Picture 1 (spheres, rainbow, N blue to C red):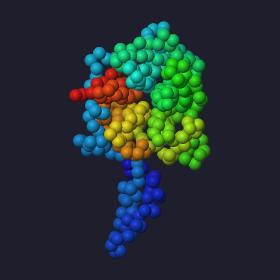
Picture 2 (cartoon, rainbow, N blue to C red):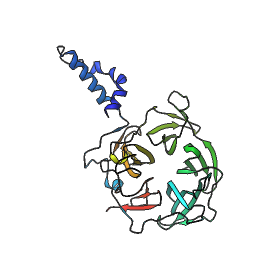
Picture 3 (tube, rainbow, N blue to C red):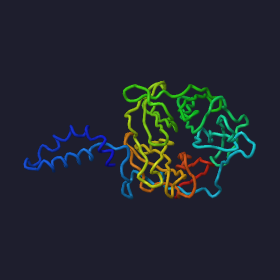
Picture 4 (cartoon, rainbow, N blue to C red):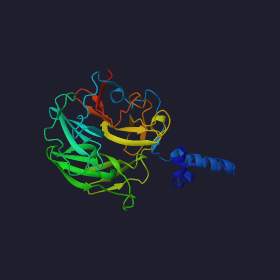
Length: 337
C-alpha cells in the first residue's frame, strides 16, 4: 500500500495546500513535509486495499460461504485418447433458459496442438452431457473463456495462442465466428506494449463494455469500449494487484464480475511462486462500488488451500448462488446454509 501511495504522490501533492491551510503556521518544516507525504498516501486510490473488518456487510455469506458438493467432481476430462483428454483453465457455466450450458477447453498435450472448444449441457448444473459435435470450434486456439449473452447473441472472450485475448460471436452458443484479437490501447490511445494479455473478463453496463485482463498474471487492468472494436485503458496501472495474502502474493487473474445489491463483485484466483501456496491456485472474491477500486474479502481464499481450485465463478440457480471451480476438473460448491 505504501508503494502505491508513493507512485501517485505527485497527483496528491496538488491537493495538500487546501487540506493544510488551517494548520498552525509555526509547525516545523520537517513535520509539514511529513504531514503532506502522509496525506498523499492516504488520499490516493490504490489498486487494492486492506481487508475489511469481519462482519462487513459488503461480503454477505451468499457470496462467500460455500461447501463442496458431496459427489465432486461433476465434470472431468474425456479420458485417454479423447480430444479432451485434459481440460484446462477457466471454462464457463451459464444458466440459460430451463437448463445450464458449459463451454470448456480440451486438449491432449501433444506438441504443437491447438487447444479446442468443447460444449456440454445439463438440466440441473450437476449432470452434464457433452455435445455430439465436439469440439465445436477448432480453427483457432481457444482457452480460458467467458461468455456474455446480449441481445440474443453469445459473446465469447477468450485467450488465443500466446495468451492474446480474442472475441468470438455465436447465435446459438454452438457455431462460433471468430472476430479476431482484441485491440487494447493505453489511456493515451497508443497500443499496449507487446506481450500476453489474457484471462479476458467482460462486463456490459449502460452500453459500455468493460474488459478486465491480466498481463502474465502480474495484475489486473481495466479497459472500456462502446463498440467492441478498440478497448482503452481507464488507467495504465492495474486496478487490482497480487497480495497481500500469502496465497496470492505473486500472481492474480480475474474470472468473473457480478452485480449484487448495488455492488460489484470480482471472483478471481491467485497463487504464489514460493511458500506454502507455491503452485496452487485458489479462488477469491473482492468488492467494488465503481469497478476501479477493489477491496478483497478478509476470508479469502473461499476454499481450503489443499489443491488447485481456481478459475472460480458463481452461478445463480434461481434460489441462490453456487460456486464452480474449473481447473483441472469442475467442482461444485453449494451455499453453506
